[in-house]
Amino acid sequence: MKKELTYLLVLLWAMLLVKEGASQQDAQFTQFMFNQLYVNPATAGIDSRFVHFNLIHRRQWVGYSTTLDGDGGAPISTVFTATMPINIIRSGIGIQVLNDALGPITNNDIQFSYAYHHPFKNQARLSIGIRGGVYNQAFDFGKLRPNEPNDPLIIGRGRESQFVPDFAVGIYYSTPKYFAGISTNHLFQPSFEYGTTFALSPLERTYTFLGGGEVILSPSVSLQPSAIVKTNLRNVLSYEGALLAHLKQKYHIGASFRDLGPISSISAIVSTRLLKDNSMSMGYAFDYEITGAAAKAATSHELRITYRIPAPKKAELFNIRTPRFRFE
Image (tube, rainbow, N blue to C red):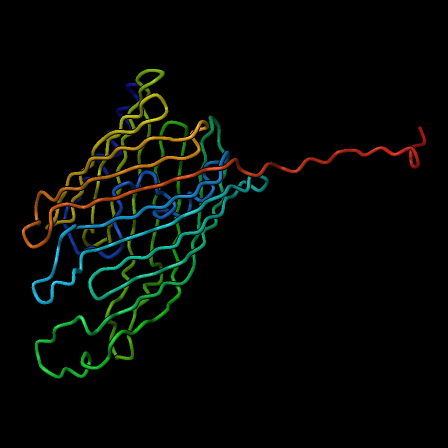
């Protein structure tokens, strides 16, 4: 157990080495360890036993309002994912639907994932996944405040919307005791011009490193460290580390730390499994900004609901005997 714990700590420490912040591009979720399909398409169908449905709603900087018109502008993000294994071909599929509102910009996407899982000894698997779909961005020019009056790029444009194709790829290695993965989002860096000659809101290609595992302390208690780093290979967009205690195979309680450069926060995470077969779980995360909150509001809230059903089993063929065609 000491060897495995040392390996996990070295892995997580290596992922957190780089530190230089940049602005938030994609929606951030504190409960990322329960939302891995959103992070990496290679995790589609990674659990060969169940079909998983996951819904997370996040309200960031609750109580924040702008100084101009006070109509808000803080991020509100909702993501729904569903993933199912296809065990007969060692694969999995998934779908994600995202709504992310941030000031004058509203992002929506619907994407489908496919992953192939190659088995190794001791229940280890190497997974390769791809995701593709449509990304929509709506821009409300009426919420902008131009420095120059009668700016032709803003005045009278109202709300405009544009659709672009979007793709991601990922690789993921997992064992019963730990996992690690790398994914690339916005593979072809789509952009939104809204009829102009330049990109108003390009989606920059980002690389996500995800890792974690489980260290069993007793039959009823285990520790689950995890970490995630997002970078554009020039500067780190964000990094986050979490440590959860898993109690009696039913409860999670723990904390995490996130750094976005000028903004950093600490979080408390709790969750519990429900129903007799533990098929449903609910989780809650509370974030508190410890730096960079002066211009915003300090607290954020995140609610998660997960449900699972048994995965489809391989169809079995039965011999049907009839006296009419029985010659024995």
